Length: 373
Image (cartoon, rainbow, N blue to C red; front, side, top):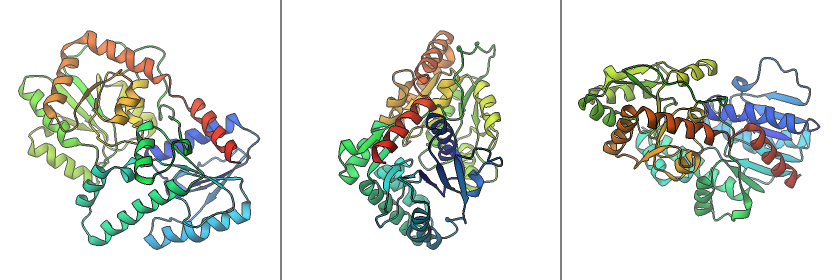
């Protein structure tokens, strides 16, 4: 089996690559896995003989190198190794047919969201950058239509792909993934004894993350006399982080923010365990690993009312209309005021999270691979 992970180097996509591959190896030790990966995703210790890691040049160095990978290098690797199935985890396939079955994992819901696309267009500064994003979006659509099978993490994304590509329902497998980097707690955490609530949004920056609505809600809570801190994990030196914090300053809530920067996985779990409430105001997610991770740690969760968020939280979370800061402030105020509701919602989160496991995701992904090979 050949896994195309050439552009995956961080975030949720890297978690998927490493956790899903590990679980699939456990499920099918007789398979040989060849992984074309970004050097930042290749483990230092490569002791498992069933996995061959191919370290290749940075294909994102330029649009031309990206095109060269999919049109020349990847087809060449397929001819050399003769896999039964190409499992591409990058949203893209070669534009021309390859001599093996293809399974495509779509991990970027933004390519199938008109609202997301509009925000991206607004955020890109040059005409060339906007042109290239549109071309990659069209490529993702073409790939989703051409693959022998597509796999996604939510039914909401499957529906969006069908609408944009006309692909049949039977050609898309909905396979929810495991709880990100988190482990399920054995029992809900003990209630913290504090007068200052810690409300966390553990995420990387993205145009869809909707920090402004969160900050507007924070201002309303502060003005109403609630005591709390906003916990973020944004890369300290990134331009986008500076813009986010500038928005917080403009709204007068910068003093409420504790930004811990981009953290290694083991420290992120400690951040979750320091929180009282988790909030996800994002309006477009393929799966929402931070939300699932927070549920696995037994946190009460507040999410924007989108199809994917409602699907993942399954009634465990409080929800609010996206961009409605008044409604978000109201949901957070309820949890801040009511310790019983916090405990009840945290228990619901933990119970719901147990349905998301990497073992189950691996078994279903292997079944999809075997149906093609």
